[in-house]
Amino acid sequence: MRFDLLLQIHLFAVAFWLGVVAVEYLLERTRAQSRNQGFTVARLHRKIDLFFEMPAFTVVLVTGLLLIEPARFDGIYALKVVAGGIAVLGNALCLVPVLKRRASAETDDLADVIHQSKMIDRISLLAIPAGLLALACGVYLTVLR
Ligand code: HEM
Image 1 (tube, helix red, strand yellow):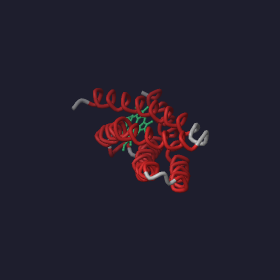
Image 2 (image 1 turned 180 degrees about the vertical axis):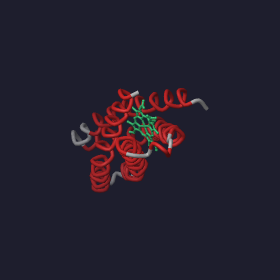
Image 3 (image 1 turned 60 degrees about the vertical axis):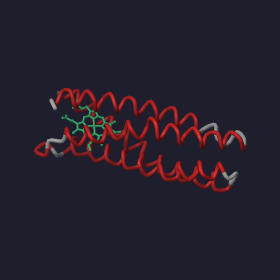
Image 4 (image 1 turned 60 degrees about the horizontal axis):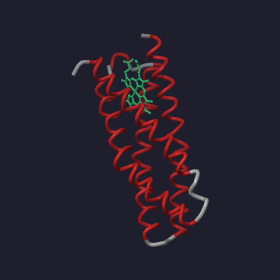
């Protein structure tokens, strides 16, 4: 596949993914409003992850891997690829507590819902800055073009 087309698909998936993450962030901020809201957030976040976020970051990863030119793997370019990789890995890891939390919501286990929510926050604290760093490096590489 041509480099330009791959890059366009990569950027489209990145933009879509960042939009999904922004919605999830706002949703998570409402989870402490009530017990019911916490359970609703657990169910919605699982659906968003499975139907939108996972496909988006899979496209980002596959196109990103295909775009890599090993000869250029240095400096900002390498930082961008590594940061992007950490962001994808973090989001993939986040699926575990998201699925567990939804299962706990179904059994009315509030303590575990809270525990899994904290796990999601911890992973996000690594994945979101890594994604933003990848974005900044990507914008820098675009400007250099
Ligand atoms: C949050 C995740 C990511 C963001 C925000 C992101 C963002 C971007 C942006 C804005 C560009 C355009 C740069 C240009 O025009 O040259 C780009 C290109 C690229 N991305 Fe990503 N990306 C992400 C994840 C990944 C991953 C996971 C990989 C590889 C494993 C990757 C590899 C690449 C490569 C190789 C290019 C082409 C750079 C060039 O040729 O100059 N990206 N990305």
